[in-house]
Image 1 (cartoon, one colour):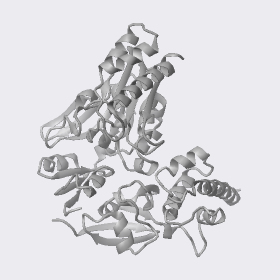
Image 2: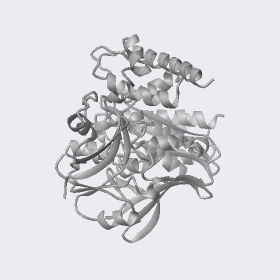
Image 3: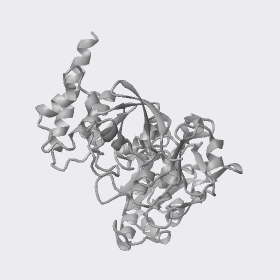
Image 4: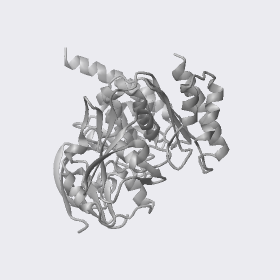
Length: 165
Length: 274
């Protein structure tokens, strides 16, 4: 029978249990059922990256994942980055570098950048281009976006050094 | 997407028991399936999620070679040290598929099961003599990658069968291998033409994608080079003997013939002159 699949998962650190229909995409589930509308809908075929989220720490296009596949996994959306009212370093870096114009691609860009910086705090230009290859910016803010990611990596590195003397 | 049932499978026998049914589709990365469903290409009745089956999550190196389970993602393959070290041509081919985030989901098995003549990994797998391990209601079997591709969108899989893993057999080629891809944009597009060239102990091996109903070996070029020719221009021109490209939105027949020749020549120069 179609529908009514129970899924257990964590979203932005909270444990959740929900029932979903088999054909619901993860993107629609996030926006319409979890009401986390920071994740944007763009192309719906995995090409634009506006819907990027972290699934078990990896950047994935939520439009080409089924909500049912979320069972047993850890989901982080753009809403999960700021902690105690303080923006994540990468969010602040995007603001500092004006790394957007219309802002529609920004949540997706930030999620891909966060995944990159988590595994590589000092990425080269090439590595940034690679990691963000699945994120399109129609305004063309790519140069500022790359600078934001690079600067953030350096800041993050300093912060980590300060934490472990 | 119209209504369908979803089932998360945990054993191979569960899958082979259900797969023969009408409208039953496998879901690994979903990067082709879900896009195809949205475009109306596929209308599944039942989707079997195979990502939780242990045999399909295997990524290991042993005496036989490198075994890549059907649920292993392209990024996992690219990052797997034995692949990067021993068969970099495969790492390169995986890297050419889609975007980084797509490669966090997409799989090697999905790439070959789609049976696109333009499959990026195919040319590399041809050069490496990969074997496809298949399970089905009748048991297990193994097939050479060149026998796996049958026609556009059609593989040698029988009803009810699935790919469990792909084996890159030992001994690994001692020589260098490369994969060149020509596409309309710098990244995130299907190949207009893809060429893999691999130097091996038994000679050179060349495979070309997006120039025939399936990926093909450039056997005439291989024969010339393995026979001692060092005129790469003349040898590369022979690629036309083995390809029959079509004209489509990615390029005309003539352009594809030209690209294939240029990429083979570049590959030969790169691989042989070291």
